[in-house]
Length: 102
Image (cartoon, rainbow, N blue to C red; front, side):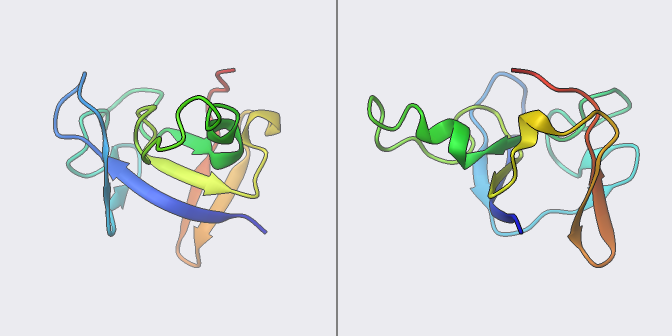
């Protein structure tokens, strides 16, 4: 079973996202207050810590949000999920994979 390690947001595009203790996810919009929320196809960005770990030997202190991810996960091979895959984050919320970027 996977888990969420961090939730990150930024108020403006082109800025580094920073970790926040919680977030409100709105259907068909994304994370309230995040620069990338809106009526488009990439409302929330997920990244596995396993992908970040590949760079930790060069940059050992990479913070959550450094790659503009909204949600940093562990234990889910995100890049292998088919588009349309639904992920249950909590009992009343789910996330759906829309686009895979390698």
